[in-house]
Length: 260
Ligand code: NAD
Ligand code: ZN
Image (cartoon, rainbow, N blue to C red):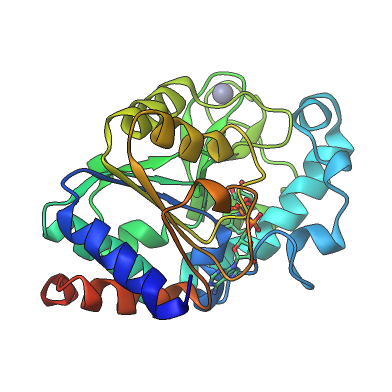
């Protein structure tokens, strides 16, 4: 399909859609200066993920120290990043009443910063902007814990039970949050359009959402700067930068009035 045909097809699907489920991945935030999973310079090109599994975090003080060292380096980047045109486009879909649910694999909080409301967002891999105790579940203020680590508390403990604090993200080998996962699959089943933006669609279970949506009769649009394994399911695929593609898509669908 020519680029313009794909844009037109996607725009007409979006114009008609009433219940849009959006799935975003790390590619929606690269234009905000947050590297995705595999890019050179991205976290996992520098650290071996097999050394940072949840089991190892639980079992080893050394792993906890390393984990907090990495988390403390990346947190200010996430905290200080600004949303881009792609995040703003998703927020615009809510303002014009089309957004059923946004499921994000990102842990950076940028959709909230762009104006999508909390009740419309499922953070299926958690958030780096929060900290919880893995022993008693008590939430802790990320900014405070960050300051403690910078002050030399290299593997911080819980204020309540003395247990192990961890950024509230889903680590490799850690169970997916049940409520969030159920809500995401429920939205995939009940949407009439699924829009995937900036995800390589290789990390499950999130990568199973497009299949679930299509099985339920929804149309699928994929916005990504490289091919994905699910392109064959999509009614339209839009390449190039997510920010630019989403702006073009909203404009072509006549929804850019909600773009502000
Ligand atoms: P991924 O890195 O596997 O895939 C990102 C995709 O986006 C890639 O196909 C890449 O080519 C594409 N992409 C990158 N920049 C783009 C742009 N500007 N425009 C269009 N496409 C672009 O990410 P994923 O699918 O989210 O899965 C990996 C995991 O990484 C997730 O679990 C997520 O939690 C985690 N992660 C999150 C962040 C974040 O919160 N911002 C950053 C890195 C990794
Ligand atoms: Zn605790």
